[in-house]
Length: 243
Image 1: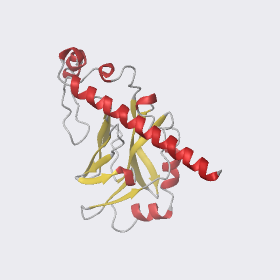
Image 2: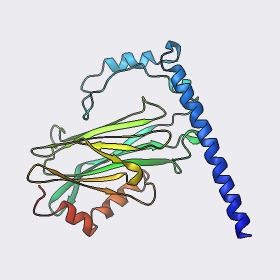
Image 3: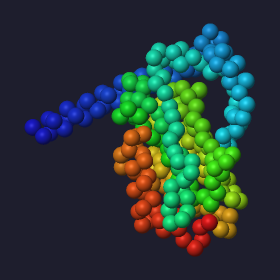
Image 4: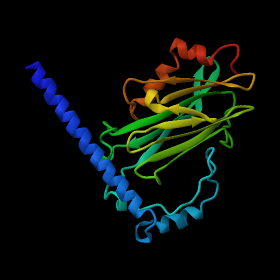
């Protein structure tokens, strides 16, 4: 009986994976087909974006392209993306930890193979800083864009008194997730929570954490609050060599 149940579950999982792979291939084929077809490109949005100034929110210049209309790739497929974080920083023994997270919503059949809840936090970065600009709000910025639908990319930065931590992270429809922090590459499959501790000598230290379950917009804050109180985290951020 147990063997039969195991084989049945394995068959269902295999069938689901095959269907998901087939759907992904169809979306990718459609994406290539419409990429330079004028009738499928959103020129109205492009014209509006050209009017926007002050796009600097991370290491990459925000280029304005005529991206495909979402429905031209999959009708009704796009359901939103978002950012979460704490600009003023969490207090940790008289120091501040600023964090930013990137979120993709559940797009039903399109990304249900990787987003099991209403949304999924695919990247979180926590940075120790000694500088919070509570007047001009220049000490950190973040931005996430859906223009690469069905892929998602975000970027941002956190400043210290004498340094700047730049970061960017993306997730693909195939769940190939990566991040770059000041030119250090992270494969997010092995942990999508990154801790950065600037050192007094100008160098950086990082810790990659592999959470066992996907975080969501509802569970993120509680998780981060608990994480920064863990002894290993405290020792990482608070020692004689960190700023």
